[in-house]
Image 1: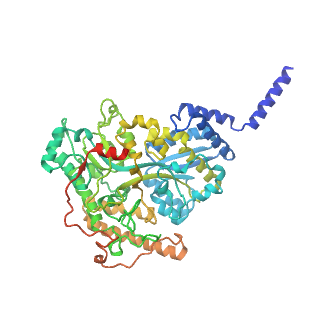
Image 2: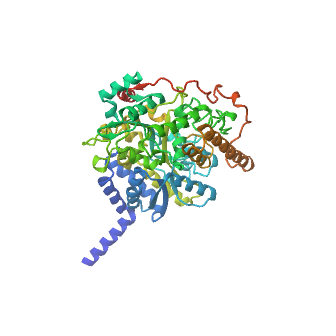
Image 3: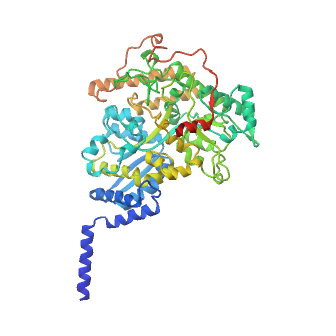
Length: 579
């Protein structure tokens, strides 16, 4: 009798296992939801429903092992160390999420596109490549795939309308090519505790004739940099400086400039998210066209125009005059810990991806927070240069986005798409954002947990809840092949820092080199339809005088590039954001 009972029980359990696939996975999902994925915009019940969908969708792919790649920021470290483990336990798909430098990520994407060898099954690849991906058509078109071959592995709760940067990953054909995973803006950073000091405010106004505050224009930024470096000099026994930047001859110096530095100075034409017809790289592409026509002033571009040259000259001048010793030899990754030393008053070009590090406690060597962990600094909109006009792009926003190339085998692409959606799912997104502070969902940034945390984040939450958040935008579609063209920038800008060339000479060379590359792209497109007919079509070079100062053309040189300084109180900015 006992044997019969045991046998029938075993049969029942076997039947249960067959009729309840993924039972153990549901238990794993419950464990992760309870222990890690809190808080969330979803209730625990709805989180479990979402995870049950992932379990069912992943069933045919269970046991697979895939490889994905992203750059090293706190958000991706969390995905690599935590989310991969959760995803494997819940779905049975193992993900090797590798972390490399941004330059190496771009190089890997480029290599896979050139060779059609499947190096990685998915990339978190900057949306700066949207012009490349939409032209080369080597990236899976997500819009069509979600409605077609990937319909069975597309999360019904994905909610694309909830993503802040979705328009930045949409091609000129209206199709979605990349799925935003994280994004961070390039804003202005300053020591509010110093700016609020009555004695310093009084001295600044006496010298410059206006209030010490958040600079609206580059003239005010320059005045503030000079004031703290040359007049204040020391606070609490520490030598201080009015500016921080970096200048090492390395690939990240190129991103320092292509990340909208020229348009912050005023290069480019009116139009958001990117200038039309001239974008923030100085590349010209007529409205309604998909064919870039040039970068030089001679072809109606602005890469070597007066506004662009002014931008590079000011970067070089401020780095030499007002930054701490050695800053000219820093790269992107070295500039962050230098700022945390607490000896810098402001930084005009500061990525909000650094927020997680800048709110670390004093015990970890961060001298920009008080004993209670409250930030002594704030972030605010970037000031603009004298060539800037209302309606122009105001700043850069990095949107790291899941990108799956067509050279990835179909089953591996499906598995990568599942992991990408898991990494941005509403189940995990609030917790991931609490760690990395790189918001990509509107529902996440409006979650009550960020209302509570906002006072300790220096303006980040207020910025991302404001309409301004979409005015900071990534590289746009005027750039026909980001990997090919971006690598030219740092070499030329590095020659300015070394003193080998003047800003004008460097930008002349850069414009010429970009057009040489675009000429080769044009030939390839005409011969083989490489860029789907949307490759460059260089216009005839003319005398620069035929373009400079003309409507929708590169701006003519100003007689006075040092306009009157203008500032605004930080509290006024916050009020505007909240409205």
